[in-house]
Length: 160
Image 1 (spheres, helix red, strand yellow):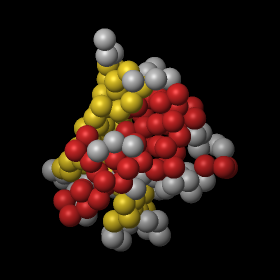
Image 2 (cartoon, rainbow, N blue to C red):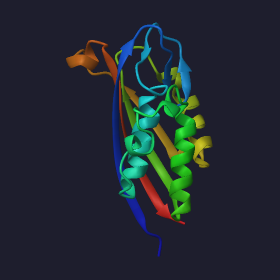
Image 3 (tube, rainbow, N blue to C red):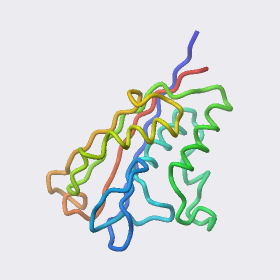
């Protein structure tokens, strides 16, 4: 009998000048980027937390603490590869990922398929197993004022 586990993840980072905007492993043209110890890819971070949470393995801060200089500027897709290897070593594989990015700007629709493709390749799954949606915060709160970008993710894992 196939066992399943579900996890959810969330991440938010502040928008600042002089940083690239990377979401789902894709660099998006924009005047501002996300501030963080790594590349600050909120989408990939939310996905990693969802994967880890599904197996009660803690969060990404446990594996890649911002206090550790080895993770400074780290490519989040490389971190996702490590998380996926941890899952596979424990006998699990990704069934699917569903995620949403909350950002007023830039418009993300033209970049979503590339995000899905990059994430799927990193996780060794098909692109149709990764859903990325984008929405705004309707100009409400810090996200609505374009002070940051957030992402939510849900992951379904299956025993292999």
